Length: 241
Image 1 (cartoon, rainbow, N blue to C red):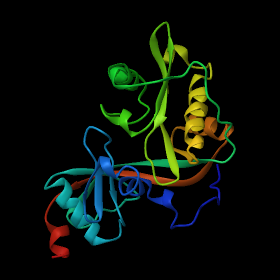
Image 2 (tube, rainbow, N blue to C red):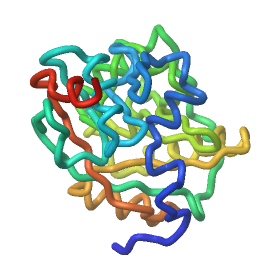
Image 3 (cartoon, rainbow, N blue to C red):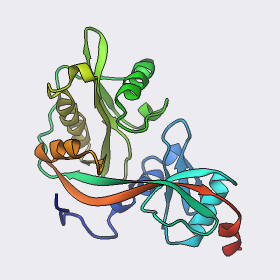
Image 4 (cartoon, rainbow, N blue to C red):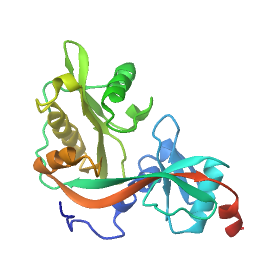
């Protein structure tokens, strides 16, 4: 895999998509203090810093999560004073460059009544974090077999001009039939109708998924890191006092 040069400027909006979403189209889902923000706890587990190199942002994040609080942030391998990195995972970001987006005749839009079934499918397939109100972030589509939800995909982060496709998963008994690809195309069709562009994230270790996404028209834009950090003391606050 090689990283594409498309939109590869260090100042591009996709370099900090959670911040761009939380201070833009998803502001109504945000809890924000100054240079730090997070989604409501039952919507998504992500936090964002305006600039991970700015001590003020870490001070604001400390105020947001409180002593001993944790935050899931991107682009951080060494936390600021008063913080510790609990665990780190490596990922990739891919953008739509040649995807054939099209509606799917079997895809149904999922709503609040479907949340228990969505959570069950997510628990069995582990596509990534999904919480009771994640459905509110955008359109989620599913395919059913004999009334049972077997495939899922939907919209998560929403920086201006872009929408992330997420929660792509298929029941193990129904894999190998291209169902997830069909839903990715269908979700992308809705994104394109709004004049926006799809992108997505995957774990760097999920080589099969990355190859699949590349084969259907996504291009690897950049590699990134996601970390869970814990606030251990008041040092971050003191530095900016």
